[in-house]
Image 1 (cartoon, rainbow, N blue to C red):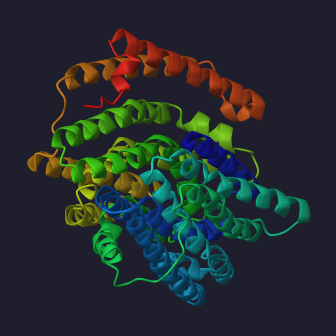
Image 2: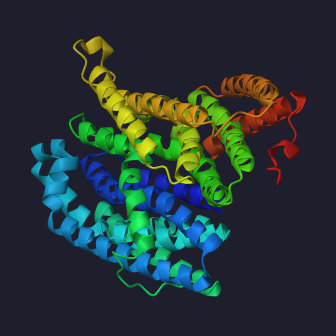
Amino acid sequence: MTGLSRVAGLVRDMVLARVLGADALADAFFVAFKLPNFLRRLFAEGAFSQAFVPVLAEYRERGSHAAVRELLDRVAGTLGMALLGLTLLATLGAPLLAWLFAPGFAADPEQFAATIELIRITFPYLLFISLAGFVGSVLNSYDRFAIPAFTPIWLNLSMIAAALFAVAHAYSPAHALAWGVFAAGAIQLVFQLPFVARIELLPRPRPGWHHPGVRRVLKLMAPALFGVSVSQINLLLDTVIASFLPEGSVSWLYYSDRLVELPLGVFGVAAATVILPRLSRLHSGAAPAQFRQTLDWGLRFVLLIAVPATVALVILAAPVLTTLFYDGDRIDRHDIAMAVASLRAFVLGLIAFMCIKVLASGYFARQDTRTPVVIGITAMVVNMGLNLLLVFPLHHYFRLGHAGLALSTALAAWVNAGLLLRGLWRAEVYRPGRDWLRFGGALTGANLAMAAALLGALALVDDWTALAFLPRAAALAGCCGAGLVAYVAGLWLGGFRVRHLRLQQR
């Protein structure tokens, strides 16, 4: 279901590229969309779920059904009240938000005014989608993974419909898309409610700031707001800096980041979503061996995807971006070249991004939010320092521009992942399994075979921009198919089998 949603997201971005392009108004929309989407990740995929799921798991293990319902009612009421207040403040303070997160736009009064308007339309999305994330966390905790994983598809369908409506009726594409975002939030929340009702856990929101469960969630959530979402904060800071760079920089970063988000969202977020409830139950049940085994399985799973995704996106960056986004008008050769540079920089951190999702779950399942906060602060400081070195160096020969922002984010992610792993190792929470050497050998051989197949297939096409969309798509599919066959064959010859992916229940 997550894969289906991400494919729909890819189609959405193809439509956006052809409708919005990479001009000043497109930059304004992406900034306006990024603000509530960033906060959504804190609530739906980040700090809130990482703090709430372990507390809910403990109530399930040690409390009654009535106690669980009381917790859900109080959390829903408290979260809803806080989000409503935040949304109202943000709508009123849209000019300040536009200045804080895109200060470079102030030099263009029309672009700055458009950014303010778009923020006011899109920001209520945060209220709806965060409550949808809360409902999805409940379903995930009861091992109902399919519906929360499918739910984001409504955002993609809503934005596609808004883009097509704008084209048909000559509306401003950016404003039509903003209203599509607004509608999508409400749809995603309402869609999940019947499924929560089926397990008799439909919340009746009641504020409960003093409820012990709510207070524990808030206590865990406060530091986690920073720790688990440091990569997203880094991306937001990148947007601030990108607003001072040449027109189109925000859009180039958006299109390249979306391709990195595809494997990250399908496999990294999905793996973390699945293992967090399990890790939380294992911690509550005092089962350290199974806890360690689950973490080990999660890391192997994401590496099996992250390593070939990294290699493939580095090699196929130009063909992929050209196939998906190039139209010669709204997105031209220069835009593709700029997006290729940032994609190759971003993808160098993909392995780290995906490992962070799994490693952070090892902390939050044990209700340790302090350690990821310290690590997150360190990574963000590293990111900002690298931004200054790579984006605004003393000598123009070393100036990487928007690609420097992407590279800084990737390198900071490696710092984050490395420190998370070191902390789990030192606390003896995690130790690698015995057959990592065999797994690593098979993975290395398979990726070398895949790289050779991709380079060979790539040599058959001279100029991707000279092809129409369907021939480009067919050629890209052929390249990817050759790489996939080589990768699977390499894993097989290296001794890897499907049964090695199964998490043993001991």
